[in-house]
Amino acid sequence: MQHSPAALSRGLNVRHIRFMALGSAIGTGLFYGSASAIQAAGPAVLIAYMIAGAAVFMVMRSLGEMAVRHPVAGSFSQYAGRYLGPLAGFVTGWTYVFEMAIVAIADVTAFSIYMGFWFPETPRWIWILAVIFFLTGINLLSVRVFGELEFWFSLVKVLAIGAMILGGAALIVFGIQLGGHQPSFGQLVDHGGFMPNGFGGMLAAFSVVVFAFGGVETIGVTAGEAADPKRAIPQAVNTVPVRVLLFYVLTLTVLMSLFPWNEVGTQGSPFVQIFDGLGVPGAAHVLNAVVITAALSAINSDIFGAGRVLFGLAQQGHAPRSFGKVSKRGVPWLTVVVMTGVLLVGVVLNAVIPEDVFLVIASIATFATVWVWVMILASHVAMKREIRKYALAPSEFPSPLWPAASIAAIAFMTLVIGVLGWFEETRVALVVGAIWLGLLAAAYALWVRGDGRRRPALRDETAPIPVVAEAESGRQKAQLG
Image 1 (tube, rainbow, N blue to C red):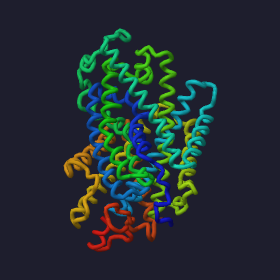
Image 2: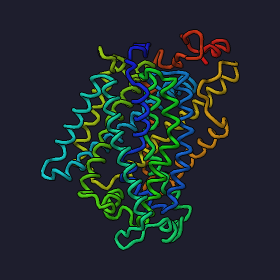
Image 3: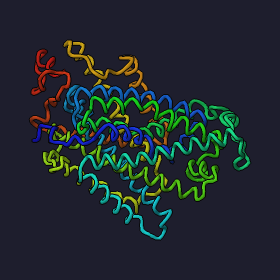
C-alpha cells in the first residue's frame, strides 16, 4: 500500500484552482437545469439559490479549513475516515465516486446531444468515444496540463455568463421589447407574484438547485496537488458567494426580467432566449459552443475528482492497492483509466435511456452530493471538537460563525433529503441512495480488513511533527489534531 500522498505532483497553481472554483458552478445545472427550477418556483427560485448558496458556502469553508490543515489527495473521504471512523470514510469516498460517475455519464451523453446539433447525421456514440479518449489522454499527461485546460474552459464559461448579464441588463435599461414583452424588473412580480407556486414550489426547486452546485467540493480534492494549498484553497473557497450571486442570482434575475418566468425554457435553453433577444447572429450556435465547453469542463473535472478520491481510498485500504500507483508524471493513472471505463458505459446508456430523465439523474446525483456535504460538515464538527478538547493549534483558515452556521447548513441538507422523498418524481433518489449505502456497508463488512479498519493518519500542517499512528489514547489524539 502506498502511504505517502507526496507522490502526487503539486502542479496546480493559484490561477488554476481559482478558475476551477469559478467554473465549477457553470454547467448543465445552470444552462438547462435552471429552467426546471424556474418552472417549479417562479421568481422565488432566486431565494432558493441564495439559501442553497449560503449552505454550500458553509460546506466549502468547512472543507477549506480541513484542506488547509490536512492537504491530502483523498480530501473529504480521508477527513471522514479520520474524524468519523473508517466506515464513514469508506462510504463517503465511494459515494463521491458514484456521484461523479452518474454526473459524468450524463455529461458525456449531453455532449453527444450538443454535437448532434451541428452534425445530426453522425451517430452519438462516436462523439462520446472521441471526448472520452481525448480527456483521458489529457488527464494522463500531468496535473498541470489538466489545470491549464480547465482554466481555459472556465474562462470561456465565465465570459459567456458575463456577456449574457451585460447584454440582458442593456435590454432592460433601454426598454427594448422582446417578443411583445417589455423588459423590466416588474416581470418578477407581474405573473402570479414573486412566489406564484407558493412555498411548496420553492421547496420543489431545491433538488435541481442543489444539483447545480454539485461538484464544488472538487476544490478540496485539489489540495493534494496544489503548489501552495494554504493560499490557493482559501482564495478559491471565498469566491463561492460571488459565484452564487453572479452566475445564478444575477443571471436569472436578468433572464426573468426579460421574459415572463412561465415562458422561460419553453422554447429550449433559457440562455438561447437571451442570445436571441440580443440579436446575436446564430444565437443557438453561440450557445451550443458554450454548452459544449461547459460539458467538456464538467467531464474533465469528474475524471480528475473521482480519480483522486479513488487514489485516497487506496491509501486507506478502501480500494485496490493498484489505485494508489502513480506514473512518472505524478498522476494516479489507473484511477483515470477506471473512470474511462465507467464513462464508456455512457455509450451503451446513450442508446437505451430516453432523453427526458434529467430530473431522475439530477435527483440521484443530488442525494449523493448531499451525503458528501453532510459528511464534510460532520467531519468538520468532529475536528473542531478535538481541537478544543486537546487544546491543539488553531486552524489557519477557520470557518466563520462556528458552530451556528454549520448546524444551520446540516439542517438545510436534512431538508433537501426530505424534499427528495416528498415529491413523487424525485423519490426514486432516496430508494437508489438507500440501496447504494446498504451495498457499501455490506462491502465494507465483507472486504475491508487490517489497516482499512483504522483511522487514516493525516499530515497536519499545524503540527510540529507528522502524524504516524491512529489515536488510541488522549495523548495520541492530541498529536493527530
